[in-house]
Length: 136
Image (cartoon, rainbow, N blue to C red; front, side, top):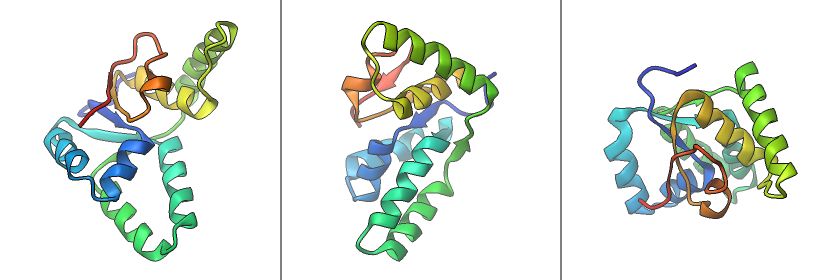
């Protein structure tokens, strides 16, 4: 099942670099925005944890809300759960499991046919049939 008008799924590390003012990440996101940007509900959860742990949660929440206004949040639906189960089982059997959150993000990208923007090359390069962009 593919979501129309989306091409990229942004991983947590990429968003954090953007929010911390790394202009190369911000510029790349701006350049890709017309192709459609999304985050997994997992990424949103990780970002919200960061807001709560911030030394200035109010400021961090405003910045996150501004960023989120330009992206779509993709839920972990039944198809995502099936893709997760398959991927996770195969990776555990091969001794190559990067962690449940990354598998769930990858399953979301695969389910929707999206390219993942990530700073986590080690973990996301493990997924077969997953396109990733690792540099801005």
